[in-house]
Length: 142
Length: 142
DNA sequence: GTTGCTGCAAAGTGTTTGCACCCTG
DNA sequence: CAGGGTGCAAACACTTTGCAGCAAC
Image (cartoon, rainbow over all chains, first blue to last red; front, side, top):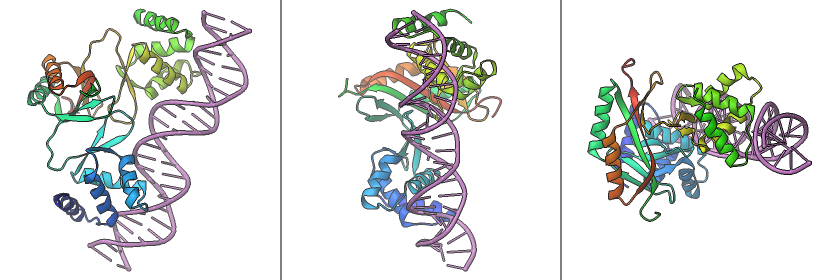
């Protein structure tokens, strides 16, 4: 794992008069080693294997911290739980979610982005963020 | 309110050996008279004014029924509660959600739809549904 | 008169919070 | 050694479910 993310986190922490703890390091490490779209529960159980003392609440709180510091992005695919995506040095993209196997394919289409801007402008709307999810079946599951 | 929706519902109900009840009629009526993207709680409280006997669970159960019968569409804008959209005879569209006032502008851009198909095809992905939400501020709130 | 429906309350889910103690800076 | 961080359990918000009585067919 690149050390850059740790630096980003420690930077955010010191700039905001917060504190670096071993738990925060552990959660960040597990997050960076996790699949790209982890749920809290998944991350928590992967952490529990090596650090059973770390509580679920700490995972929640640390993920919120990672989100604020710009390392994680909160996602909601409508399955009733939050998922977190890596976002350090990672360009914006949209998702195709396979409803059979759960695989997530990322994509980006510049023209789709452009037309979103166009449509927003036509309606006097200022976009701060957006999400586009395609649900369906991937190549292996069709 | 058009009677067509009632017919759709009663049709679904009889085809599935279910029963038409006054509660179901009431919930359907309130749903049709509601704003386009109602939350369960909103619908429940508007129903409670005229029919205080109808329970929240019935509203939940009836909305699930409306969804199955093709009259409503479950939405999730990531605010932690389900919203239901009218969908009888209502073409597909996407949403701009104003994060200030909650207003929802619907739009449809044929080229965006087309490029979604293109991108999916390139990845061997078969789309069954999709959603595109733009978050930001509307004209009045910018 | 079956069988499904309702209201209520209880149970479930995922997430947040209050608090006493602990640890970082 | 002050103030934030942690683990735990309780609280939360939203949704689902079990059940006894009720109503539609």
